[in-house]
Image (cartoon, rainbow, N blue to C red; front, side, top):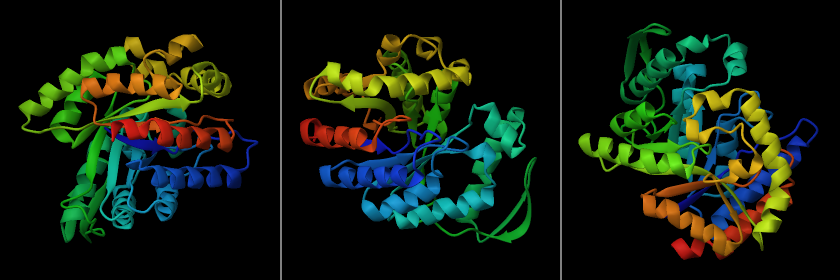
Length: 327
């Protein structure tokens, strides 16, 4: 099994942006030192976080050779800018960039961009289509619902051919099937519980087999490790509670299967969703994902308000005590 680090987690308005950045750079260095496979960034628009593409281009210098992955809210992008930025990141990473296109769900992000949320699926499809044209054709003509181009030059070519790998982020069964049929892999949401995964992994595997693909499952997971479970929960709880209350208030539960609702008590938030506790407890929980056939876990161990030293210590302890057990 492979392991990655999710560099997201958000900051609070009063926190130093410089300190937040240094924390992510240190986390990237630790990931390189202890043999993690990948570094990921999420879609951070208006979340007091860092722009995912710019952040990844910076951390690539701290951790050369690691795979770079990004969740991108494609309905909010112009395909020309997205294609050129993604191709550039693919070159920077040595052809190890992974794009996880997502529809998005937060109303305020669509409102801020002046894009109707009702157009998110059509824009998602059209941005994807035009990017692929820009990556593979020397001249591009496109007349679509949202974008018009007449004989424009192609965008900069990525190293991967014909274009970077794509893992589709999906919560519902129909999206999981779409990931199996249309993408190189499925990126599981950090909100999805083991209960849901036990139902959806076979759905993905069967759809991938029917499409003649091997498939790949990469799951975002919440992780916090300490000497004991009690200490891990004591450190993480206030920051986790704040984040999940915020996401629930934003209406995110409406986008999730019933078993994955996040407007629930703290203990229920942890259940089937967190890898938390001592090294032995974390390893035991990871085995459940390994047995399901999940190939990669991308771990987030920082939430708004958590000091960098607490988060980075968790990465270090995981790298020392847990990662070697799955080498």
